[in-house]
Image 1 (cartoon, rainbow, N blue to C red):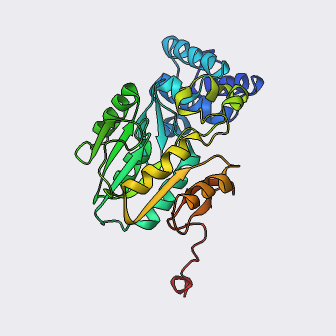
Image 2: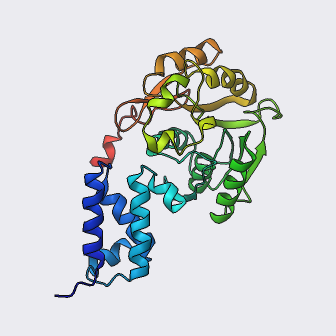
Length: 297
């Protein structure tokens, strides 16, 4: 029997190491890193599992697994992360997008028809994930992403270009909506920092040690950004417009209260797929929309 490592044996060995290191999703993480190190696809691994792994590939893979065992996220190791239906470049200057944030997309896409023309503001855009995912889904939309980080805006611009969306997306270095005209946007979205300062030390190392604290720290009670956003969103949102902001799982009542006090109507808390509070909005709640039973007849 040959001792030459194969895709299958290499993958299994890495899974064992990650399991022993108590890494979440060891099978998925090890597979994603194997694909990158060996320049193969998931299909290659499934259909050609006994393909030989070269010494150079094995060394590159071992280095990646070592980094993951030190709790560096896969997205940081690879420099990219999938979000919604798009692939984004991520660097240490931007938050690594998470599936929870896709709840914002659910709300916004339910509010605007596929070919409808509308303008989006993404306040605190980071990698551009939210804005670019909207633009990829809605061909009639245009949008602006803002951030106070020049480095983050550079990442967002690169992502827009790589997705062919640079013609409909622009990016501006400013604080929230400073400099925008009044009543300029149909949809205003934001995933602001909302972790209470004292809680950051207790976050998972993947977040605490690798996401920029500027994108995490929401002040003493985690609500500082929302207090700033409420009047700004009200100012720049068109009459009849929609806003949607991501929140922490335990912040629904508090953030809803801030928007209620700010003069917004029909404010609601939308749950994510894990049934946790995730978005505050005046838009539709996709989870509450009843299915059209006529489609089943």
